[in-house]
Amino acid sequence: MAGVYLDRVRKVYDNGHVAVADASFEVADGELLVLVGPSGCGKSTLLRMIAGLEEISSGRLSIGDRVVNALAPKDRDIAMVFQSYALYPHLSVYENLAFGLRLRGMSRQEVAPRVAAAAQMLGLQDMLESRPRQLSGGQRQRVALGRALVRQPKVFLLDEPLSNLDAKLRQTMRVEIARLHRRLGTTMIYVTHDQIEALTLGQRVVVMCDGQVKQIGTPDAVYRYPANLFVATFIGSPAMNLFRGRLVVNCGPRLDLGSAELPLSGLSVKERGLTAYVGRDVVVGVRPEHLRLDDAACQNGLTGTLELVESVGNEVFLNVTHATTPLITRMSPQPLPAPGEVVRLSYALEQLHFFDPGSEQRIV
Image 1 (cartoon, rainbow, N blue to C red):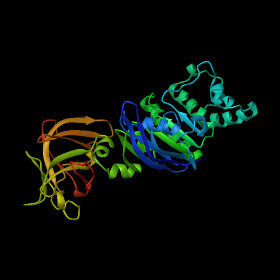
Image 2 (cartoon, rainbow, N blue to C red):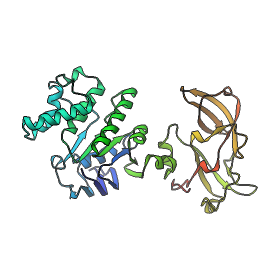
Image 3 (cartoon, one colour):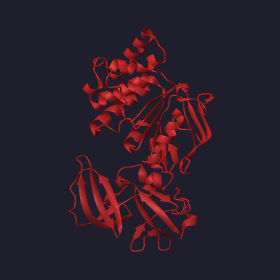
Image 4 (cartoon, one colour):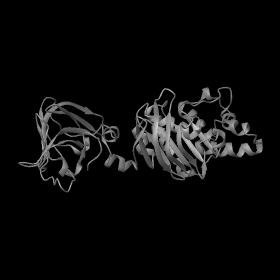
């Protein structure tokens, strides 16, 4: 096993496009770290640079105590699992698992116990004579994982490995990957655009956008304390509700939205680090689960028109319009007003997030 260290790693293509801009972070030995972001954000390019499949334009990449910028992929002691299973259709499961080891000149006596151990770990022991066409999508992905597993590499790299599976299989495979990581204790770097995968699998999460690292932290820290507006709206489903307006304190703190107001009664501008923003524009965010329906005990609230009720079984989403601002709340099933009615939503000050509208960075 080994840690992975990136120091201002950068990728610029010949046309001048910056795919990855000065990425610097450490993946600890034995850690499962997830790179997450929208399509085109640079996460797969960054993973391919770690694998040696993309040339690094500048910066330094180390695996363990070796700088690997100039090393070929086969010399980096990594194994990669791709979005496509990339199995050999004419070979059995056993032969697919053994292929990479035989390519490296290992004897049958060396290959057999490794394949048997991987098959046992992934529940493939009864499928070793089957061809890929006889397997389900989840079983094929397990074979792809097993092919990397038999290598016993220092680092596993997984590039959107569950994208081709349906929702139920993705959930099952997430559990299997998490269990596999706990059992092996091997360093894993996992790329996904799915925030659910990122938050449930990652011990830490690297959120990327436009080639830049926007935030690094535990899933809980990234969700509860987003560093900027991008992370606030990308992480979390439904996304964080945002109010854009001017912070005023005369006759009580509030956010002037132009056609409406967001009360901030009890807000200590000084304690929340907002002194410099009095009389200036600011962005206030609140998670859907922190907007409560008709909580009369809460001193801060707003009214809006209920547009749509979305029931998904164990949860209900209310789509509400406050003046011209669309909002969404998450709550447990309960008796609800009908669409078209005016509703009151309340919120606690400690559950509000404040951002600078210019830099888009978190204020408090």
